[in-house]
Image (tube, rainbow, N blue to C red; front, top):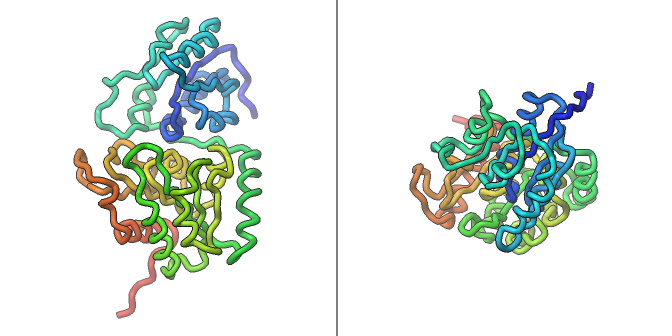
Length: 325
């Protein structure tokens, strides 16, 4: 039974990055819990915007395209200043929340950073009594778009089989494991008995074909190409069809974890203890496993990542058979 609409209006200002939007997505459900039937407006960047189109309670998504001299914030202000808000939640810590009328405002500041994972930080910031698990809002349209790309490829080549999704792309410097190692990893997995009959699906955005090329070439007829084939919600629907996910520290890694897929995140000189995939079925492998210490992501060897993938498989898919004495 649908929750009746209320006249309570909530503005949720979230990130321009997919990963941060996923990390904070549990806030949507928390708003609905506290204000049943709330009418929610989400302001976010263009890449994650499709993610909210089917989110419960969201009646409007305002896209923030970055402009010079912070012009995007002025554009947003003009669109929201005429509304009397009941609650404003701004995880970006902008001045906007202080410049519009609202009964209550929750605005990020650095004082919330206490070394906890980002999911817990956001949850505490909004006053939740528990960690707000990230959520996906995959609609029928996204699933149909994903199926239109994936199903014909599964029907060809070696036929359908379990899928391991691979995301060899991260758009911040230093986060991407070298493309040739992704190809080498696929070669190793192809001959591993645990992955006999599996398909290797590459996922990414429109400009991510070069980093994905070595892995796709290595996969050959067992490959499935979902690079640049849909928006973030279609990509989420594609990942939701995988049995395992392996990817760089990226938005797609957080999508996989939110979908409940067994997820392995690869980390270089970034804070895996803050930004690691969230959930019981997740693992990380970092170039330096000491909290607060870093090493280039190139320090991650192919063998080490291969072993981490095997451990992920054995933990969540099928334990390795006992060795014979």
